[in-house]
Amino acid sequence: MSEISEYQSATADLDPNRVASAYNDVRARSESVDSAQTAVSSGFRDSPDKVETWMEEPTTRTSILPQSFQSTNVDYVSKTFRKSSSTQQINAFSVLRLLLMGAMLLIIAGEVALYFLVRHAAAFYKQRVSLRGKAGRLRMTLQKSQSYDEYMKIARELDRYLENSWAEGKYYDAALLRRTTQMLCKARTQAEKAAAERKCCKEARVAAIALGDALRQGALRANAGGWENNCAWAQTYAEPAQEVDEYVAEAAASISIFQASQHLSTTEKRSVLRQVARQQGRTALCLSGGAAMGWKHLGVVRGLLDAGCLPRAVSGASAGALMAALVGTHTDAELRRILRPELAKYMTACQGDFWGQARRWMRFGHWFDAIEWAPRTQVFTRGSLTFEEAYARTGRVLSIAATPQNPRHAQGQLLNYMTTPNVVIWSAVLASASLPGAVQPVVLLAKNRNGQLVPYADSGVEWRDGSFCSDVPRNSLKTLLNVQFTIASQVNPHVTLFLYARNGAVGLPVHGWQGRYLAATMEHMLKLDICKWLRLLSDLHLTPPCQQDWARVWLQRFDGSVTILPYSHLGEYLHLARDPTPASLSRSIHVGRAATWSALRLIQARMAIENAITDAWINVCSIKGQRLCVEDLWTG
Image (cartoon, rainbow, N blue to C red; front, side):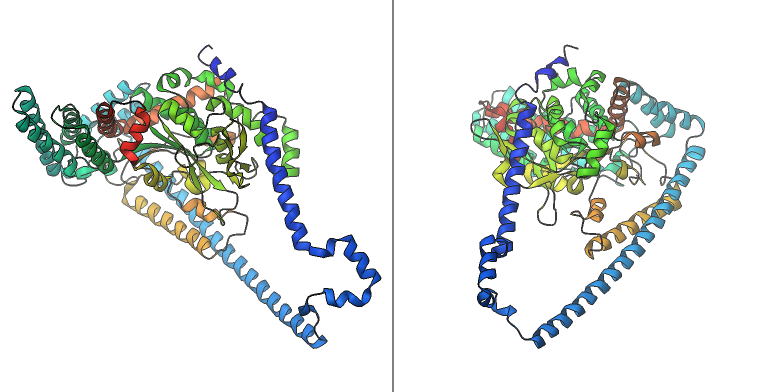
């Protein structure tokens, strides 16, 4: 198709031979360093000249040896006994560590089996009891909705039938929201009235200053009055409380009136808007790993894009890094054209000769080759764009999580235009997707001043799967970008099995506890106990030294402020390493888009305030380089 054909020229600026040459150059440098280190460690013992000297002059051998080796037989025997005792202690410790690790793993395995038994019991109860009668039929119809309008129509009918509504004072402070809304409304009305009646500049200026004070003195801040709490939004299928709608509408209107005031200087407006932005914080979309299940992220992106609430900040790890790179390097108009089932013919990561891949795995320990993946990845990243170039092109802050090959010696890093501006995006995607056993670790590549690809910082550090440390990098995003609200699209197969909303989820209420109180309590207790044993394995260093603390992989946070869980069935677990067809990609996009509908009202409300702040800032600045100006608003 013409809309998709643009990808055929996306990789023209990077010949596959250049990719191989770049990586071979890195490998050659690494081998030369290893050779030098080996020569230094071996010393003169590997030198043929020294060997000949020893053969010809045996009397000088003892003078060449270190003084510590010129010891008596008694010293030699005592050292031998001490070494033997130390070896026995090490062996005893190894046996004890194996026993402890085996016992803890057995306990974890038993608790995991019991956990899934409890989950199945809760699901059985839900099917037999909760989904009966008219409410059950409406819920089943809701799950089969084909559009957002159809979904909301059925959701409103469900709320009316079940008499769902937000309970005041339980999960949010309705009185505080009403007072805040009234305060903003009063200040905005006075500012509008003063401007409309053309009162003296002094009175109009006082009214505008009062509106600015109302905005920045607590009226606009993250989760004001608890209106963003998941438990509050889990009380209804469709509509929030009236206080929330009124607060969001008044906040957006007040920001617009404030920035349009003619009686305040640009400096004064910028000061107020920057303070409001820091209090409110920005929103980020976080795309998890998940192999072939990661295609569902495209549906999540499409659902947010159609609703006009796709965040400017996007992060990804592993499979999610590829999807995030696609979003971060294309504009909204381009995404609307290319997020279609026809995109499947460009998703060829798993293509290749099976026996050749098997031989590669037996010989090198990885199934796929990163050099073969490089040109295929560029289809999604518009060639060799760097993070800085992508930001200048789209205005989106793309962040990709990567983990060093040996995380015991270095921490994971969030790669974006602020931390690694010159790094090529496709190399960051390869690094974040380098799962041990699937793809070898890679070195990040960057563009130098001449536009040539060179190893990043010439460090030789190799990187791999970003989901090991930062599947949903909430803390890093908050530190770097002032992200206060995260939308996590979670499809990791080993994570979704353990995500369970005891009190319901946003737009998906439950009456009482999910699966009743006993099942919900047992589920939570078992999950906490499993985490306890995993933390013990990690803290006591009982896991084998395989360049990764596997216990820590399970202990990180995998959820966001809002967590979107696209539906997955058991058969998909058998095809995690299979490329999609147009039909399967169409299903994945629909499943991902449908998963956003329940949380869309909360996301729209949050983004309405954030977009109002951003638009006001751009209008106030009214200078070139607006995208850099926007980042100054949130992070300056």
